[in-house]
Image (cartoon, rainbow over all chains, first blue to last red; front, top):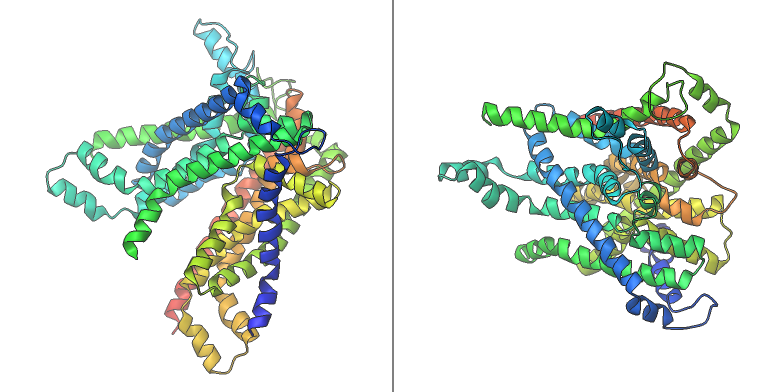
Length: 271
Length: 269
């Protein structure tokens, strides 16, 4: 029986080896080659000495931070209020539904809404401000990215709030805490796991949204993802693209260790 | 909640829902406009839908996308379910956690990293870019979600059932098909479903690993959107919205159905 079992699982382990481990190793390997295919440390030297690359990285992290912050500010109250609605499963479904609309179609909608004679500009003209350049600005990129990420933040926070025992809130009230104290001392700390999961789900993709920078940001915003896409598919400098990829992977592990901290602690306590 | 906060909560939720849905309805509204741009609505027409259905190239791409999603989800579900069984059967906790961490790498990796690394991988092995490479990539990034959907079902399953089946002389194949499989079927269905939607939604990975010969709807929409407004794309979004709506309702009914069946199962003995 033992041997048969291993045979069943073979495809899965094959996948782990060839589509999870090998690609990461290959991207690290590729980062040591220049455009002519010679072994070099030059890509890393270029990356760490070039003001352009470093500024781009900082910029990308800063934008991802802003997107995550805006998403969190909008999503937390939404998840909290959703918890108290009557048909909450139905409402939750309606939050999820937009995530099933292709991301590019949503971006495309904003090309129309933000365009020179789109609805937003018509409204601005109507109230007397006059049309503004909205599309292809940093603000429009931030807006659309936040819009797209909102449901991914609401879901984990909503689940965390659902898991919260109401008795804790009642106890806090009985002991004389006001609403604000109950929120800051009980509700928020106890739903932190959901916030962390949401931050993880939003921050990492926000570093790499290259299609939005192209369609909405008008190439003004360059994220790590845009730089990778540019190097791989436009300038064909795979080595440099892989170097930025390695930076992005490292950034990903940093975010994961920061947001995964809570779980590890919990696990230790349970042992 | 007091009356005042309730008003505030309802107002806030309404605002969020408006924000979430306005862009989508804006898109669909203009798919019925006789104009050429997404502004100044000009009167009702089906013309863009008619144009869409006469666009043989677009229909071919839609069919390819659907075939890709159905096929990749099927293979990913098979591999992922077996993988979940494998992880479940791993007795050593450290090995199991390591396997799970590896499993989740593709879940958290940014799309560009998956796309770029697969591109290097295929080029390294000399695999040509096209339907094959896209199919393999989709299977690859769908497997972890299937595992994550199936594994909890396995962990919920009571082990006494398996012991009982073995004591009563069931072969390992019988244990799998008569005891384990029925218990995890809801997880497998949910996994297939999620894998299917992942495939339909993907743009970035496909963008990296597709050659000139094969296109999905996402790639086509991106190409058209870069050239500006084309109301045929609006018509397409109208159809895809209805499709997504049906999928959501289907998924909802499916989860309701399996939940009910489980409850019925509890009652039976």
